[in-house]
Length: 152
Image (cartoon, rainbow, N blue to C red):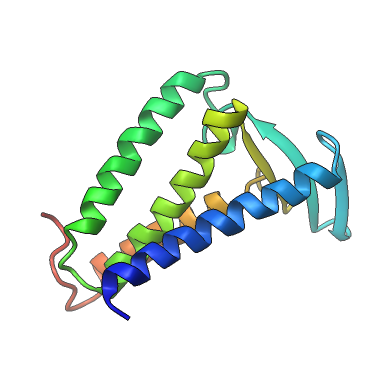
């Protein structure tokens, strides 16, 4: 499969999984309702996050939408012009899919739906996970010995 198709599929899979899980959780839990899956360790807990990561900078909706649109455009441009390799493409595809998932929430709901609750960490979602994994992969790809230059 050509690289660009693979990138689009990854972005769409992340976006679809994120939105589907949010829809399911939103339909089955009340706000701040929780279902323990592993007692004391992991629950599904419905939160409406009106801030950024970990709920910081609450109630800055238009700012977050603006920043998200800029980020999505930049990541898309980087992905489109990528000549650095598969890991770089994978990382950007994960980040882009996650950014789009949270952007859709902000635009259509006015907040981001979070629901993955490990009790020792702020509640998050699939989009946040994709962004985090993509960022970690990008860092690893850039720092590993023999890595191609990623700045361009």
